[in-house]
Image 1 (cartoon, rainbow, N blue to C red):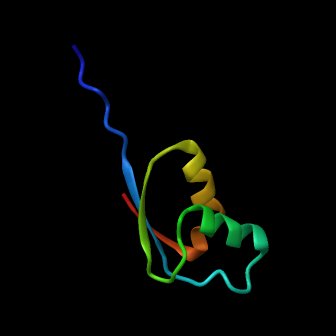
Image 2 (cartoon, rainbow, N blue to C red):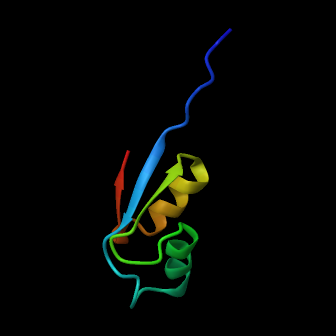
Amino acid sequence: MSKPTEQKTLRVTLVKSPIGFPEPQKRTVRALGLNRMHQTVEHQDSPALRGMLNSVIHLLQIEE
């Protein structure tokens, strides 16, 4: 039997306010579960998540 593969977890922290940025970027930050500055959330790594992070990378700090 093979071991189940563990998905990588990413820690995402909001380090810059989305105020003054386009509305789609604000909605992406909210969809990531980030409501306040310096709030950190953990997500399972996936291609969809990577696309979301890439669109607002200038507002976030990402740790693997």
